[in-house]
Every structure is written in structure tokens, then in C-alpha cells.
Image 1 (cartoon, one colour):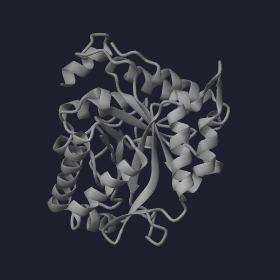
Image 2 (cartoon, helix red, strand yellow; image 1 turned 45 degrees about the vertical axis):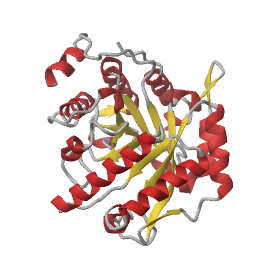
Image 3 (tube, rainbow, N blue to C red; image 1 turned 90 degrees about the horizontal axis):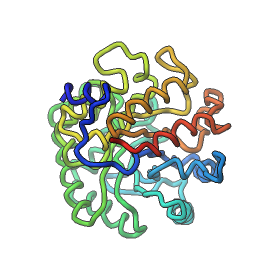
Image 4 (cartoon, rainbow, N blue to C red; image 1 turned 30 degrees about the horizontal axis):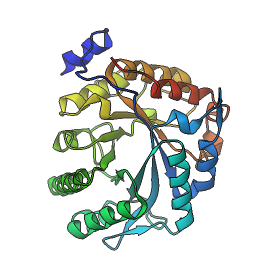
Length: 312
């Protein structure tokens, strides 16, 4: 499979089927709903907007609470329905994003144990709740942003997560819906790169949360965009379902500017059919760190070109 990717990068096609356009996804966080709606309407020139540079959005509005699915308290019913309507007007897929960050949890707020009480201890009911919520709003599927930001996860943690993903994938696919998930790009925390082979052939997309850890000038065997795609292929994944993660809150990383890194990401996308995942649309989480290129459309122009690529 590494040989296949190298062939792609040297101009030899490794894709079997034509691709209409590469996938670009962006998250809408519960803390930045209005700002995200505004970002979707930002003009890129020629009558196009940021929304038209995207393929799908993930509404990061749902969390596991006491083993069950709940809506973040910052989110209203009209927030959900208004964003869905806006996305539909722009022909975007809309995903229910369930995440496990909590205001009262230490550090960055992620609690694997609270999420596990739902996806492992109450798996059947939790999956049914996810299915019913996608039906309620007519959503296209589910995005799993369930993370552990600590090492030391066990074999049981991995197997519980994999069993959950595979069963949810089966249920969603039976209804014509999709499943995507977010993963760490290296071998730390979880889910991480070493878990990909457990479910790569069953999911419809993975967002590798490389952000500042993966870029144009990565020197290790995993920390550049092509290497990430190569590992995904080796795990049994379709490169067209792989999205390299980009954060709007880094002006430069790996010794290159945001635009230089986006250009490198685009080169990998052009030859493999892979895409990009943008964290996140509100641009409000860390305004002091925001690359101004996301506000003047220059960075979005790179993303638009990735979205419009017709892979060989």
C-alpha cells in the first residue's frame, strides 16, 4: 500500500473509481453557533461563500451524560434547526457530532470514562438514541469526537470503542446514513492511529487531528500529510475517506506558514483523493491565536481548491 501511495504522489493513479470532489468538513462548536453561521456566509469572491468550499458540517452539540445522549445546555432547538436549514440551502451534509468535553472536567475537559459509560456500559441504548436523533432532524449521519487525552488506555478500552463503532456503522448504513470519527494521528491517547485497522473499512470518514503535529515539513514516519494517508491505506481505509485535520488557531506549524501547509495538504489531496477537516468554524475559541487568513478569505481559498479537486 505504501507503494500505491508513492505512485500517487509521483503521478501514477492508485484510485479505481473517479471522484467528483474531495471532502472538506468543518465542525460547528456549541460555544460558537452564531459565529459559525456567520462564517459559512463569508464571501470568497465570485459569488461563492465559505459554505460552498465545504462538503459537510458536524454539529458538535451532543454529549454523553450519565450513559445517555444529551444536548449541550448551550444549544437550543432553533440553533439545531436553523443550522440544518442553512446547510441544506448550500447542499452540505449535516452530521450529529457527539463529543465528550465537560466544563467540570480537568485539563481540556475530555473525560473518556464518562463517554465509556455510554458507548460501552450502555451501548445498545446509546446507539438507539443516536439513531433516533438523526431521524428526528433528518441528519446525514454521526460524527464521533470521543477522545481520551491521557495515555494508558487498555485493550478493553480499544475493543469497547471498536465494538461501538462497528455496531453504530452497521445501524447507520442500514438507514442510508454515514459514520465518521476523529482520531489522534500518532500512537498516543485514543482513538489513535494504531486503532484504525479495527474499523477503517467500515467507516465513511476519519478526521486525523494532526493540526500542528502534522505538516509540510514533518520528518518522522507519520507527521506529514502523505504519511498519514499512507498509514490509513495500510489499515484498510479508502484514501478518499481520509481527512487531514487543520486548525484555524495556528499561524504556522512545522516550520511553514498556514498557507504553505495548506498548499502541501492540497498536493496530497490532489493525488490521493483525500480531504481536509477544519477545526473550527466559529474562529472564536482562541482569537488571539487566529491566523488572519481565515478572516480575509485567503486561507479559505486554499480549502476551496481542495474541495474542487477532481481526483484522478
